[in-house]
Image 1: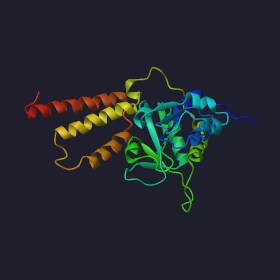
Image 2: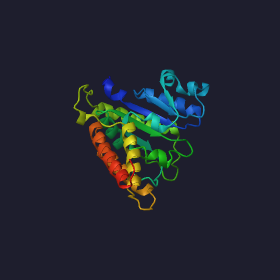
Image 3: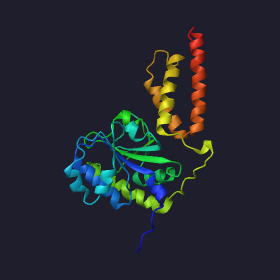
Image 4: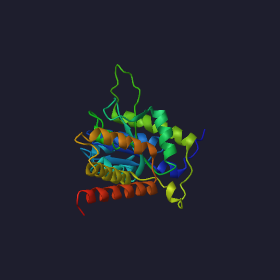
Length: 257
């Protein structure tokens, strides 16, 4: 039986990001997992060994994905143009995120791909994603493995999510994005949101919002609030304009210019 072809725009807006991969064979096996499920975008963040002959061997014909894979230094760079980021994690963390199982995550990712770029992020083999890296994600994905033996190989985890993405693309594929959308309809990119969060943190410091308390808890909660809202580019510009005025008034109150 022939399977329907994927609408290219939907699959093309989904990327798999591997962070700090320690074993090059896992990179090759991940590329193979993606290609078998009709996905093609792989981004590597600070891999310990790449390029690698072992990665090529384990790719087993998915050499083109390795050749075209992006290699960057930080997760922030890997997802800078994304408007939705899912972080795969094996356990609960101090960073509180909405959590999906793979099937839910795949449907959410494919639906979000109707608006712009989407990333699914996988961490290091031994330690996964750091709390700081998870803070860059909108939500978490947890594979409900056997609790008595939950050690899932990185490439196997990628295969699970890639399979669910394939199903979701067949059943929930979004339409192609229109080029001339109203500014209110263009979602803010990850880089734009990070710029806003940096300015928000500065503003809260300048107006003495924390009053000697550590800012970490408040900023984590504010990040979750704004990430859930999925603001548009225009809305982020509006918020940053408000923050700029608040900063200006704080400086005037302090006798600064």
